Length: 157
Image (cartoon, rainbow, N blue to C red; front, side, top):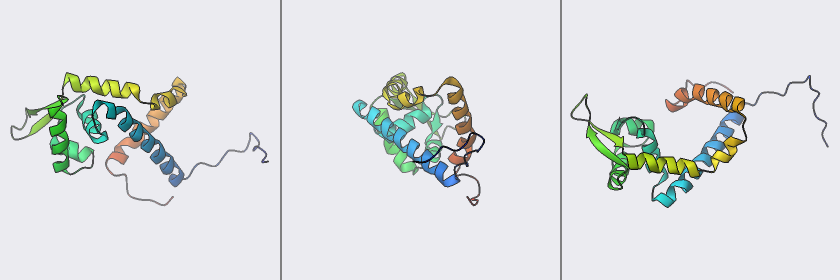
């Protein structure tokens, strides 16, 4: 049986590897939760990721492909299926008539709200008090830009 450390002893900070493993585990669980919540609506995880990307603002196929780190040809098929289901539509870009933007429809935004509402991850988030949610949100928002663009130059842990 181990003895707890005295209150004056500060625990060591987790390593970068430990933090990344934890982020990966949480991210993977949220992705699985997302996929499970989307399946009853006939949507795949990737279709919901595209819908999530365009639910507030239109985006070009190229922007979606870059944001989701996918080949543009894969995005075309995903958008085709979303469009066939009435979840998105394509519109000519107001700034470049050669570009088609993907726009979420009201039906697409409604199904996304429903999917998010049935996700089990909400229960985990509910265990955090408002101050903890604010802290976590701020930290994740700080990390997000670097993670989305592939991170900064690699440094030692």
